[in-house]
Image 1 (cartoon, one colour):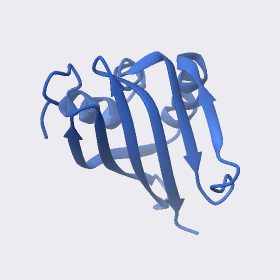
Image 2 (image 1 turned 120 degrees about the vertical axis):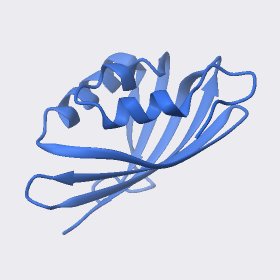
Image 3 (image 1 turned 30 degrees about the horizontal axis):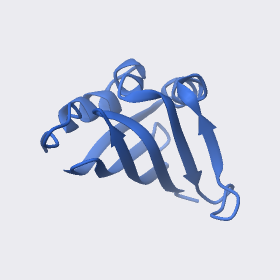
Length: 121
C-alpha cells in the first residue's frame, strides 16, 4: 500500500479508517461534495443508493460502525487520481460481507466512490 503520486491520499490512512472502531478517520478522507453510489442486492445497478456530501456519508458510516462487526482492508491500489480497494467485514454472528470500491480523488480527497457489496445469505 502506498501514496498516490502528487496526491495526499494515503492508503495507510484508508486502512486505519476502515479497520478503526469509529468512522472519524474514514470520513476525513472524503471531500465535502463527495458522492457514493452503492450497488447490492437491494439497490441494483439501474437504481443504486446514492449518498451526496459528507453529511449523508457520515450518517451511513455512523450506522455501519455502530454495528457489532469487524472491518478489514484487504487490498488497495492507488494510481494517480483513482484508487480501488477490497474490504471484508464480519458480523459477530459470523455473517460476512465483501465490498469492492473504485474511487476518484481530487486533491487527495475522495470525491466519487462506487461500492459493490455482497452478504452471506
